[in-house]
Image 1 (tube, helix red, strand yellow):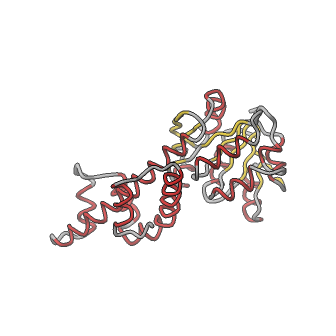
Image 2: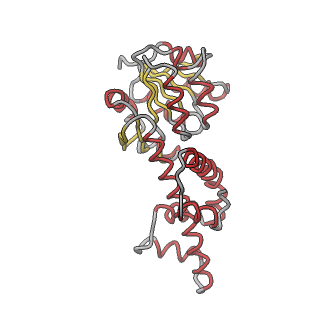
Image 3: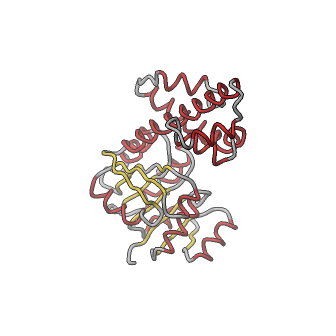
Length: 269
């Protein structure tokens, strides 16, 4: 394929994205800091460079997959960042789940382009490796459609949500709802125990009943409540904090969603 894909942030989620892009036939130019990661990416067929600017300079599409708003601002903004290095017609996709204001502020620094899209994801590294990730995309329609075939290398479902920032809004609501659902499943298990029902038996039964949910399925698949809290709670805490901060900035009250998230058995505050 003639398109060049720049990539920044080849971590737990980003590395399998790069692998899928290379296997799909794209020329992928990656900036990665850690030597073991660099070696693995070279072995899979990616081109590894020594700066963010080098990854963005020749790219038609740049994908940024970093953990936090602070990291996003560091690699996308500034004189040596993606927006400064990429061409005006380049489309930049941010997979970071963070504040709407962050992506809007970054985009405002380069009104003539490149075009920045917010592209938060739903799924795991395993979903990426299997090519079945879900990506939400916010931004101009033409840029969304330009990015879509590239993202299809690792995403089965790509949902255009509207203007810049809208995908993050959807993701934040989704995360709040998932966190609340997980808390409700944990509360339901407490009731089940008082009724003499073991956690495993309850979760197995719920899988076949109308009370089942994605949260209940996730808890069951990870091996129960302690294991789920160990594995998922750090990510849920980050997502909940981002949702609380974003809604507070906009003067939006989470209402009962916020109450359930704060008062449930899992420590998510």
